[in-house]
Amino acid sequence: MPRRAGTLAGALALLLLAASCKPIELGLYKVLGHGPTVNDRIDDLDDVPGPANNVLYDGKFSFIVTSDVHFGNKGASYARDDAAFYAKVLELKNTMAVPPSFTVCAGDVIENGDQEDEWEDYQTWCRTLEALLGNKVYTTTGNHDLYNDGWDYFEDYTYPGTGFFRFAVAGYRFYFLDSGSASLGSKQYKKFRDAAEADPSPKIVCTHYPAYGTAQFFQNYYTMQNTEEADTLISFCTNNNVKLYLSGHMHEQHENDLGKFTELVIPCYAVYHKFAVVTVDTAAQTESWTFVSY
Image (cartoon, rainbow, N blue to C red; front, side):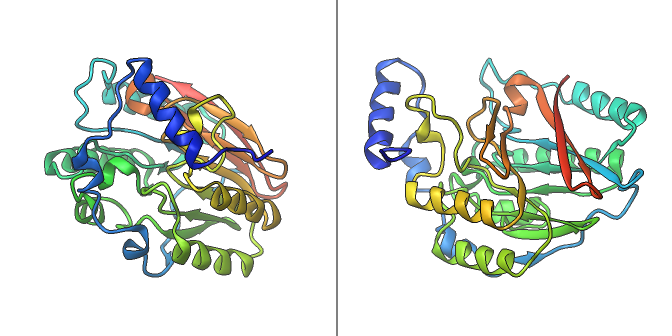
């Protein structure tokens, strides 16, 4: 039996969600105003500089992983507390044996796509973290970031201004893939595949949509929407020295053992006031993590 029932399961999920009276954010402005397709957004895989300052401690480095920051969401459950987050980051920097040295953000950094003040708030948030840790915040594309033709703002207000890029840290290679449209698209996947196959480095992959997510009923709607694409991606990662897969979008925390690598689904920063800290032992090529509340 297939791991997921694909399109039929997604349609059934929508019906179940509607019946349960949970809010569904599928207004036409999010469908018709989604902007360029992933094949149009993607050009080449960009090689960008990796973090340079205060990264290695006795052969190890660590970094912060956030997702679903959602600047601009005014919902009652989105009672953000950025000041408490900054204080927790500073505490970790001053107390951890291997303090975090840079930040990964797995998308949905804003709520509405076309509201420039939301992007400005996110950029300020990034600059505050960069001042605290001394290195960039690396951001990939979420679905909310694309709403209302938000792609141009994403390019202008995030680093490195594309959702498809890679960088190296102490022998590890980080690959960020643009899954903001719930698919990698044929062109991006081929470029990722060709680059990763030629790269023997241990790898950490980051997308917004999970590749697996969870087996919980109806939540497959919140993962990559093409079952074959997701299965192909998981198989490829298994066979090409991917050590860790980072994603968000589901807003809930999940840890999925996929054999040779683990997928971490990062909980919603804005709702749960929670993030992950990942520590990498470069000699042993092992990764460990903890989820931190603030």
